[in-house]
Every structure is written in structure tokens, then in C-alpha cells.
Length: 325
Image (tube, rainbow, N blue to C red):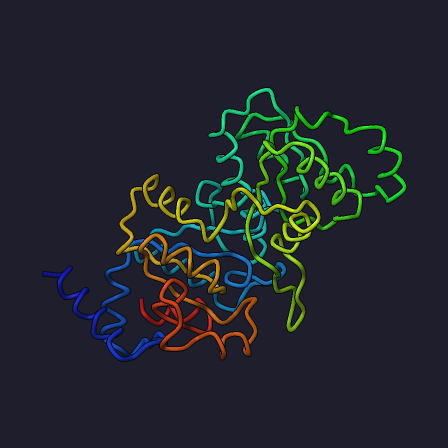
């Protein structure tokens, strides 16, 4: 009966209303909150922006836990490890355990592990956290990354013209994530490994084009670096491991024993967070505290927008969840 009541309430909220703003004074919305068992939160633009807490985020997480809700985090940011995320949260009073955090770097490492690449090498365009998680979880040797931060075009000529080292046939994959020290050398080396070896996997950690650095200031994210490599190499990634991967959504739900009908994905982007939740059959909540501009939201959110990116609810930030508990 409780399940039927929830489904009836959900249908009545959706019918004829299109985009639905979360309203604490709406009994159907309060019933929805009671039904939810697990909340999966994106991090950047949802919990914090560039290390500064979204007002009320830590309190919302604490109150959700106190109400018996499970809280998990799924971020496309491959520049931070699980422990990095936990430490950052602690600076503004938010609690999390490493095992509650899934990053696109972790998803990438788990994918590589499944490909039976033992004894092969992986060229990384990305930060140290990405290389380390590939080493630890996939058991693979990596090279590149931050070690090449100071390389120049002159190094391209001196290092690559004599021949690729290590040889292209020994490199199983080129993995591209957000790289704060991206340069011409890394672009050239990744390009040549992908062109010299058609069997070399081209792996992108996630498709995010940009991230919010502060009020009105945006910075390139992983998808921008992946697009640069794709353009130069003349081939698209073989796989994009982070959100909105449907296989990742299914893996996360099954590995944690979660029911998608009682699980809500909360994020600040339609094309990754909401699409990720929708692909797994979850409930979805879009918050307006992150990387999508007011203009993007205004032009994107409509009754007839693609269902695959259409949020069930919209709220200013996750602080609004406090008022439903």
C-alpha cells in the first residue's frame, strides 16, 4: 500500500507539470522524501565550489543521515582520490567515509582491471590521483601525468622523433582526465600512441566540459582535454567511464544493493548527473548551485526536453532537503 501510494503521488506530481520544483510545503513531496532510502550526490557544485561549502550542504548531509538515509557520493572529478574528498569535506564540517565516495578515476581503474591488461602500460594525461588509483586498483604500470608537466614542444622533437619510448605496442591504453598541467607535449604523446597502435584503448574518465571555479568563473574539465586528444588523434574515446555511463549506474546500484525507485541522484548538470540517474532508473534532483549558468538552465529546462536528461525535481541547492525531513 505504501508503495502504491508513493507511485500514485509521483504520477500526480509529474502529470501535466513538466519540470517540478521541490516544495517542502507539498505533502506529495514530503511523501517522496519518506520513500527515498539513498541519496547519491555529485560533489563539485553540489557540496562545494572550489573548496567552499555550498551554504547548508554539510547540515543537509548530517540531517539525512540522522533521518536514516544512506548517503553516497559520485563525482566525475578524477583529480582527487577518495581520501582527498573526505579530507576536503572535513574542512567545512561535512562527514564522509572513503568507501562512500566513487570517483570517475575509480570507475576508470575498475574498467581497466576488467580488460585483462596485466603486464601492459598505461599512458596517463591527468593528475597524480588518477595515476595512483590505476596502479592500486588495476595493478597496472602508468607513465606520463604530472611527470611531464614541464615538457615543451622542443621535448616533443627530441623525445618522440627518434621513436616512441616505451614502444606503442606495449601501451595498452591512453587514459585522459582533467589535467591542470596539460601541455603540448602530453597532447602530442597521447596522439602518437593512439595513432601508432589501433588496439590501444582510448579511455576518457568523463565528458564534463567545464567546472565552476567561483561566481561566474569556469575552468576546463576532463571532457575538454579528452576532446583535444580526440581531435589530434582522429578518433573518439572507446569508453567514457564516469557519469552518465549507464553501465556504471547499474554497477553502482547492484554492488550496493540499492533499489533505483528509492534512490535519488542529485547533481548540477543535466547531461551527466541527471542523465546518469535516469539511465539507472533512479529519481533525480537538479540543483542550481553549480556549473550550469542561469541562461543554460533557462533554455534547457522545459516540459518537452528529452526525458533522459529531465530531472524529476529542481531546487536551489541541497539545503532545500532539510525542509523535507
